[in-house]
Image (tube, rainbow, N blue to C red):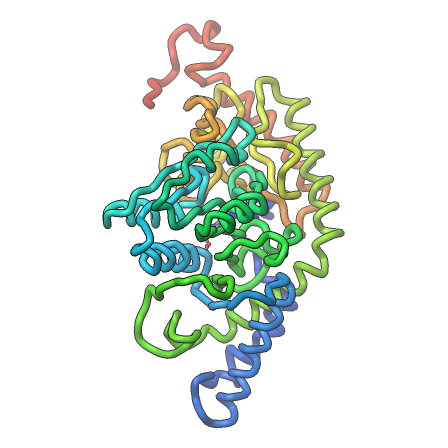
Length: 399
Ligand SMILES: *Cc1c(COP(=O)(O)O)cnc(C)c1O
């Protein structure tokens, strides 16, 4: 059975052009870029070209780029690095409660080490409120972290305003841009955040490659020790194919961004409209205006997201209940809860995230299968409207 893949916010397949581009560096051009010999120095040159290319694509003249093993490491590096590097000024951090686990769990770890963290919930539209943020600032606040777009809802955050405010206050601002890089324009110059994180496998590059972009003058400590690579801030032999592949993938994504964005938005909107028309008691989660093009998060009342995903999977449709982490636990999404969405509604959430291989036929397939699956599940739902028909609850529901 062919898989209809609608989980691109979790990961994307590598673009074949990227694979072709990195093939030599996986084979013949295997040399260590730290070596003095000529082939090693040629690899070094390619890495530096990639660094330059990414900085150009993101308009980051005023930034240093440090390659990492992905988004999670880069978020850890940014937050721990800024926290430990600036703790003499204060130990208070502000973090939005819709952040990816790579950010939230890092903040939680810092709390165990004596840092204080204020978690900001959002409005029902999934957008962080600037006034709430301003009111949470203290004299000892050293770091604010708010993502560029949320991975579960696709909702875009007012990062430019936050960056401007933090700059005035002399507070470091970190933004996780993993869900926007290669999807919507991402200009470091325009946003003005001090720390920005991207991840290659979210834009058709190789997995386990990412970067932390640091505005020049931002004080940050390394997480690791062991070598002088990446200006002593991120030691370890470079992931040459990952780095070169990430730069090539970003280049392709940026060049196709406009047409692909329009195309995916149309598909997403059609999917959304179809679901709202065909299935009663459905809500779209998060702002429908301030969203990246390919993401749709809906709650289907009286069903459980996990059950829905399994039934869809049986029909060849790969979607998600939101974050990859909550997909394997039965807790509803922390993002939806933080938006003030009730537990039972958050439980019935499902995220479709489209990518460049998807076409109309995929949307049509979902619109054919999903209503049938929902009907089937609702007949067994303990909250279901058909409850009377069945008399007793079919199975005991635990929360
Ligand atoms: C996927 C993702 C990450 C983690 O990136 P990895 O490269 O998979 O470690 C971090 N933040 C967001 C918003 C993500 O979507």
